[in-house]
Image (cartoon, rainbow, N blue to C red):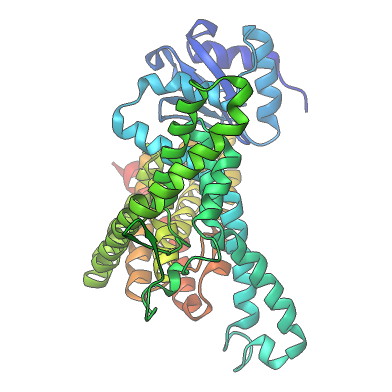
Length: 466
C-alpha cells in the first residue's frame, strides 16, 4: 500500500507544522510527537483525515493513531517532508518530559520500566493458562487432563517451568529495565536482580512458614539471608542506587581502570545496602501495600470492583494505569494471584463493545469502518483505537463502556476472581484466569459485551430524540 503524500502533509499541517515538532518517532500503531505547543494542533482537521484513526495527548507526548504497518510508511514520509532526523523513542521521551509535572514524571518512570518487560509477563500468563487447562480439575472431566491422561503430565510440567521462569526471575527482568531507565548498565541490573533471588537465600515465598530464618553475621550485625522472589520494590530501589553509584564512579575513575573498579565496587556496595537496608524496608512496605489493597477488596468487594472496574479506562487516558502493573506483580508475588488484572481484561472488552455499537449508529463510512476494526483490536487487548478513535470522540460510548466495566468489576470482585499472571487483556483473557474462576469470569465477559453495547445504542437514541 502506497502512502498519499498529501495526506502526510495534511497531518504535519494539522499538528502545527514542522516548526512545532521537537521530535518524532512511532510505535506499532501510533506516531509519537514531542510538540513545542500542543495548542497549535487542529484536532478536528487531523481526525478528519483518512489515514488518522484518532489522536490524544499523554505524558507530554501527542500521539496520532494510524494503524500497524501503515504507521511506518507514514512516519518515513513525515521525516522526508519535515527534513527531521529519525528520532528514537528515548529522544521523544526526553523532549516531552519538559511538559510533565512531578506526578506525571513518576508515572512515566514506572511505565518506562514495566512496559519493556510486559511481553515476557504476558507470555508467561498465556502459558500459565495452558498449564491451568491441563492441570485444572473439572474443566473437561471430573479429573484434570493430566490425571486422565498421565502421558501429558511431563508436557504440562515443561510448560509450567517455561511459564514460571519470568516470575521466578522477575527481579532480573526489572533490574535490566530499571537500569536502562536510570542510565546504568543493563547487564549489571540483571546481575543485581538475580542476586536478590539467589538459590542460597531463603525463598521469599517460604519466609512466613520458615521455622528459622538464616542470617549473616557481619561484624556483629545480624542480616537475614532472605530472597525477594516476586517482589517489585526492592529491585526498583536497589537498581536506582546501583545506577547512580555506577554513574558516579564512571565520572571519577579513569577509563583504563573502569573495568577493574566500577562494576565490582558498585555491585558490592549496592549488594550490602540491599540486604542490610533496602530489602527489609521495601519488603515491609510492599507487604503493607499488598495487605492494604487486599483489605479494601475483602471489606467491600462491590465498591472496590465498581471503582477499579469503572476507573481503569480513565486511568488509561492519563497514563496512570501503568502504576498498577507494579501492584499486580506485587499481588502475584505476595498472594499467588491478582484480582485487579481480570478487571483490566473486562474493561478492554467493554471499550470494544461500545465501539462496535457505534457501527449501527454512525453514518460516516470511515468512522463505521474504524468502529469495527477498533472493536476487534480491543477484544484482542489493544484498546487505543477504540478508546481514542471512537469512544472518547462520542462521549456516551465511553460512558457506556465505563458503566459496563464497573458492573462487571463489582460482580467478579464479589466472586473473588483471580489471575495467577497478567495475560492478554481481551477475549483470550480467560486463559490467564484460575480455572475454578472461569464461570464467574465468563459471566463478567457477558456483562461487558452486552451492557456497553445496549447502553451505547440507548444513549444514541435518547440524544437523537432530544
